[in-house]
Length: 322
Image (cartoon, rainbow, N blue to C red; front, side):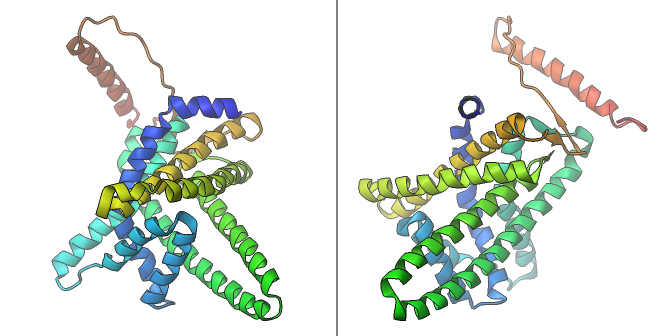
């Protein structure tokens, strides 16, 4: 199973796709932070939310990358002085905040060889954006819950530290590690279950997400050690924090997509069938050697094949067709 995962890792060009996701994520951070902070601000103050986000992110990905995210949070605002500007800003916010999840959805679909039916394309695009935005809202709610849990744990540890100082430190570290593991496990599980246009059992998703979380947590210590020792951000001057953040997102994307490959092969060998949703179909990728003499002839032949496929797809719109 691990061998098949490694082979698909190279065949599906996971490293290139991860770089693409890192690029999209950097530009989606601002809109995502606006939504997440707005939701959390309904229950907690903005400054308290930003401070706790920085603390959590710093513990997860390091202080340098967390500083860059803190700067994004500081500048994440939506101008409401003008109605037109606010409307355009909201649309841009919606598109920006959902782009990252749409990119993940399309990539996992391609890894699992899924695609949306032609006649459902536009409707499904809108539904995908709505689903992605709901995931952003879910992240805000999950952040709020995790902040509350951390506050309760810290309060309990303060009481415990007065009587058992050494035991409290160790217990706090273990509790924080377990909570972080469970939250990340849940996030990976939601991504593998909800985003792909597929029907897959929760059991298979849970095992795949557990493996992915384990890789992420183990790799976290390695990449933190590497970034701390190599001092890679200093070579880029003022952009050093952004470079460190990009490295972290790139690494996380690699783990995310590697986990999607593992989940697929686990389901194939030990789990249930992965079936396309009612609005999606399976497809196969076949590379055929062309005997055309130049690029122009090759492109003309591909265009003819695309026209034939387009005609077949259009026929599917006929009444009574499946």
